[in-house]
Every structure is written in structure tokens, then in C-alpha cells.
Amino acid sequence: MKLIIGLIVLWPLIGFLFNGLGRNIWSKKVIAYNATGFIVMSFVFSVLAFLNVQSNGVATVHYFDFINTANFKIPFDFKVDALSSLFLLVITGVGSLIHLYSTAYMKEEEAPHYARYFAYLNLFVFSMLLLVLGDNYVIMFIGWEGVGLCSYLLIGYWFTNATYNYAAKKAFIMNRIGDLGFLLAIFWLIVKLGSVSYDSVLTAQSLAKLSTTDITAITLLLFVGAMGKSAQIPLFTWLPDAMAGPTPVSALIHAATMVTAGIYMITRSNILFSASELTQHVVAIVGISTALLAATIAIKQNDIKKVLAYSTVSQLGYMFLGLGVGAYSGAVFHVITHAFFKALLFLGAGSVIHAMHHEQDIRNMGGLKSKLPITHITFLIGCIAIAGIPPFSGFFSKDEILAAAFAKSPIYWALGVVGAAMTAFYMFRLYATTFLGQFRGTHDQEHHLHESPSAMTLPLIILAVASAVAGAIGIPELMGGHHWLSHQLIPIVGDVKEVALSHSTEWVLMGASVSIAVIALFIAINRYKRQADATPQTALGKFLYNKWYVDELYENAIVQPLNKFARFLKEVIEKNVIDGAVNGAGKLVQFSARKIRLVQNGQVGYYILFTVIGIIVLFLCWFNDVAILRFLSHLKK
Image (cartoon, rainbow, N blue to C red; front, side, top):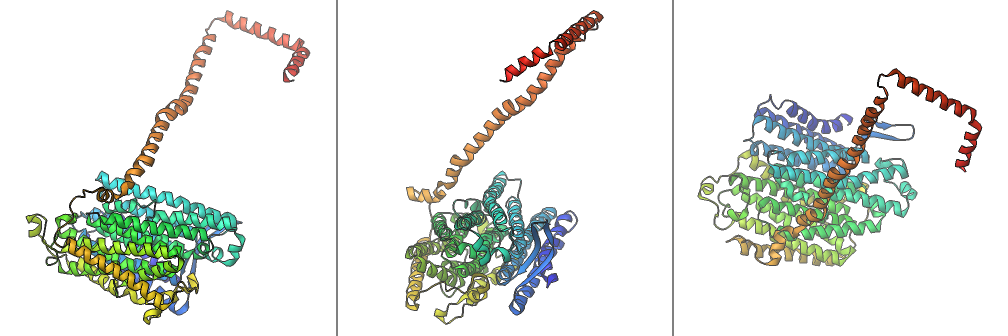
């Protein structure tokens, strides 16, 4: 088992080294086969690890001591349990499909850049695997930082474009803000418990050693880290800008990997979060607020990838709502279903962009249903799944979170239903504007419209099937199911009944949320199947189209003042104070040297005069030493 777990992580690392070091040597065919093959191998070994967990339970392997001192030790250990094994399957499975898709989508790139792209992609998967496999918070943090670095490299892949570079830096900096919170939480745990290993920290004995203030502070700091990585208010604006990267990168970042890291970390630390009621309220409020804010913005966006990006932010808000109300298995369930349908939607968008010669404005599309039949039907399945329409996967995971939210507070449920309605509306607005009605692009674009190659459509078909049937792992007892996922996660989140509602109440809640979503769905189709949105003219429309002016607020309230302060430090403090002190010391020495050297004028008479004066001064001091000492003691008093 030690070898299997090690190879899960090593295959993507080997792919990174193979393509990165050989980028000027290998052909694109060799690069594509190897980059995809290494991730597929990692998926195969992940399946073996998952099966081993099902048969033999948790597997923990020790490789070496990362830090080993007399009083403190951090082992480099990996843990494969019910939670990490599920994430391994999602990361490597969806990652393999995205790699396969990329072989065709990025084929126009020159071989060295093609290799660089796949090297970054492999390194991204390696970092994410390190994050979920680590058996302590420090190893998790190493992977946590790794995915942050890789997101910067991939978002800014086309580095000759200054706008893309700005988006990459924005993602990197905003993630660093959140990472500081995570790092402070790790230090707090070390100071209070002397350990960062899950088996030591996440126990009732460790909780007993922590005060209420300690638990609240640690969990809030961990949540700050999750806010940055999983794009929650106020650290969410980097995620839509991450669309600057290639579309498969958007699918990888937004679907199964980086943005779900915060949900994984909080679920792993659920015993800490459940012990702090204040933190749970904060998580739930931030989650539902993010879900609603992002949904309102998505309604008015016209860039096909921006709509999906804000959709991701909104869905992540739902997951955090689930975490905040204690529905940990429901949040993980939504992570899994979201990985399938959001990867499907992004790759479907990439297929549309590919057919439209890199056009991303949905107002210039329309009527693609007949031209791109596979992309159309798979994209439609993804839209139905994310809208939460039964029996597709999104329905089951969304309903579980909403039911838990109702049990906690009906207000959470009501707001969640409003968000679900908006989700159905903006996704079918996107679908209708893109695939229905008449084509609104140029004649040249229409002439070249064609379905994507099989390397791109095969992942779409697989993900569409997964989006349709993945809900089977969480069918509730209400519908005669066993909720396999919830039982799998009992060792992680405990055997806690997350929703204490009667079956009749659950049916009413379920029917209400689905009915509202279906109504929103049909309104969107009827409104947009014949024409696209015009440029917003109303104040509200402009407000939503401009994304609540959050970016402008951050620019004016934070970025520009910081830039002005930095210029002040550079122009005034550094030049006049720091450089002035250093340069002034040098000038003082030079000035003193110029004056003192005049004493050495080469005239012997002067030398004899100064010698005589010196002897006289010494004699005077010698004969009047008592008087001098008395005078000095008087000065001290």
C-alpha cells in the first residue's frame, strides 16, 4: 500500500519533470501521450487505494520526518481514508479527462509552450494530491501553496498579454491573504497542542486542552484560508478573472481541484468547527451571501466563461452554507457532483469557443444546437444538473444542503431557494442564448462552425453521464435510497443525523425548490431563445453587469491607497530617510577625512608644536587628576 499511495503522487510529478525538462526536445504527440498517461496512471492507482479503503479501512504510511527536533516533530505521512480516497478519484478522474481534452484544445501551441502547459497542469495535480493526502496541516499547507503557485502559472500561461498577467497576480495575491490566516492557525495549533497531525489535533482530548477562544480563533483563521482558496466574500474577485487562462485550466481550477480545497480542509477539521457555534454561523452567513451575490452578477454577464465563473463562486457558497449548518457530507456530496457538471460546462464552453474561433460573447452566438450536436446535448445535461432538476446529480446534493439549512434556520433555506432559482435562470439564459434561436455571429464564423474532435467530445460525454448518474451515491432514505456517501463519511464527520425533518416536510421543501427552479428555467428559455440581452440600460442592470462595482471598490479603497503609500515609502522614506542616513554617514566620513588630513601638511614645525601641546595636556591631567575626578562625580550627581 505504501508504494501505491506514493505512486499516486509521483506519477504527476514525473509528468511535470518529463515535460518541463524536455520541453525543447519532445514532439507534441509525445508530450500529450505522456502528460495524459501519467494522470491516468495516477487515477488507476487511486482506484486501487479507494478499493483498499473499502476492504481494509484507513491506510496511513510514513515516508520520512519532515521536521524532527527534541520537542517537535512533523512526519511526512500520507493518509488514505474515506474522505481523501473520494477526493483522489475526483481529482485524478476529472483531471485525466481535462488532460485528454487539452491535447486537442491546445494543439495550435508550439511544442515548447505545449510542453510548458502540460508541465504546469501535471504540477497542479501533484500539488492537489499532496494537499488531500497529507496526514497533517503542514503537508496540506505545502500542497495548498503548490496549487496557488500553479494557478498563477496557468492563469498567466499566455504571459505576453499584460491583462492575463494582472489576472494571475491578482489570484496569487488574494490567495496569499487567505493563506496567511491558514498559516497563523497552524502556528496557534503548534503553540497550544504541540502537534499538527490530524490524529493528535482532531480528538476530544485535544479539544479539552483548548479554550473556547482558542477554538474560535483557530477555526476563523482556517476559514480565512478557505475563503481565499475557495473564493468567498470578500476574497472572491480573483476567480472570475482566472478566466484569462486556457479553458481547460478554468475547468481544472473551478471544478474538481483548487477551489474545493477549502471545503476539504473544513470537512477534515469538522470536529473543531462543530465546537464553535460562532464560526459555524460565520461560515453559513458568508456562504449564502456569496452564493446570492455571485448569482446576481451571473445573470447579467455575456462572456460565456464569466457566467460559469460566477456560477462556480455561487455553488461554492452553497457548499459553505452546508458546512456552516453542519451538513458536512452534503457539502462533500455537492463537491463531487459539482466537479462533474461544472467541468462538463467549462469544457462544453471550450468546445463552443473552439468552434467560434475564440469568440466568447454569447450575444454573438445562437443557433449552435444543430451545428454542435454533441456539445449541445452534453451542455444541456450540465445545465439541468446544476439547476437541481431531478433525477440529475445536482438535485440530490443541492436538496441535502437546503434541507440541512432549513433545519438550522428557515431563513437560510429561503435564501438558498432564491439562489437556486437564479442559478436555473442564468444557466438556461446561457444555454438558450448560445444554442437556440438564430445564429448572430459573422458569416465567416458560421461557415466554419463544426463539432469538436473526439479528444474533446469524449470527455464531454463521460462527464455528461457522470453528471446524470452521480446523484446515485447520495439518494436519501426519503426516496428509498441508502445514501452511500453519508455512510462512507461517518468515520470523518461522525454518525450525526444532519437533518431532523419529517418526510412530509422534506417532500414539501423539495417540491418547492424544484418548482421554483423549473419556473425560472422556462422563463429564461422563453425570454432568450430568440434574442440575446442588449446592453443594460437600467440602473440595476448596469449595477449587476458591472459586478456590483466590487473590483472598482477594491481598486479605490485598497489598491490605489496601497500604491500611493508604497510610492511615499519609495520616494520619501527610502530616498530621504534610509538612503539619506546611509549616504549621510558616508558623506560625513568623507568630510571628516578631508578636514583631518589637513593636519598632515608635511611641515615638521607643526608636528613638534602639536607634540608639545599634547605633552602639556597630559601633564596637566596627571597633576590635577583628583580635581578632575571630583568634577566628573559632581556632574553625575
